[in-house]
Each structure stands twice: as C-alpha cells, then as structure tokens.
Image (cartoon, rainbow, N blue to C red):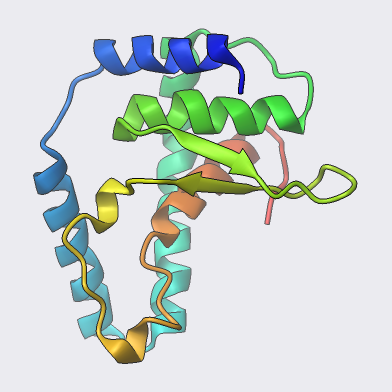
Length: 153
C-alpha cells in the first residue's frame, strides 16, 4: 500500500463537499428499484447501471484530475492504486483495496469493505445471483479510464 496515495485520498476527502451516506444509499436504492420495476430483467439492469456509471465516470474524470492534481500514472498498478486510495476516498469517503492481479498484471480486483451504496440493502433471493447492485461503480471506473484512453472491460 502506498502511504502517500492513501494520505492524498484523505486530504482530498477532507476538502470535498459531503452528503449523508444514508441519503446516498437510500437514493441509489430507490434508483435501482425503479430500474428493476421498469425492466424486470436483472441482466438488462446490470447493463443500464454500467452505462449510466460510464457516463458519470466520463464526466467525473475531469473534476478528479483538476482537484487531485494527479500527474500521469506510469503503469496500471499505479492507476489501480489511485482509483482505490484517492478516487473512492474522494467521492465515497471509503478506501478500497487492490488485489487479485493476474500473472501479466492486466487484470485486478478492487474491494470496498464498507460500500456506502449497499448500506441498507437486502436483495430478494431471486436477484442475489443475477443483479450486480453496485455495477454503477464499475461503470464509473470504466468511463473515467476510457476518457483518458485506457481501454477496460
């Protein structure tokens, strides 16, 4: 773990405007419930969440770069660290951990211990295996990285 990156994330979070975690969680939950009501297909909702998140990330990256004053990253490992330690802290107030790198360092996982989007969520049993409730976050990362010409899946 890069202590400098973690400290920069803490500083950026302290300078950011904040909203209630409860408000964020409940609003997001209502949003996902509405998508499910409009389209009773979890796979389609997953795609919609990814697309919406991608659009958000595409716009958010400009703000992130201007506020964080982050210079170009030298490799994917540094990009992953910046996302986990600065991006998640700056916008959600949580730190994330990067793990499970593949052998050629082109794939990784980001783990959020306390995901604020799922604070008050209990998915129905029939959706637990098919709905990717926080897929919006994947979309945000995807959209932001694609905007800076890092192609991701």
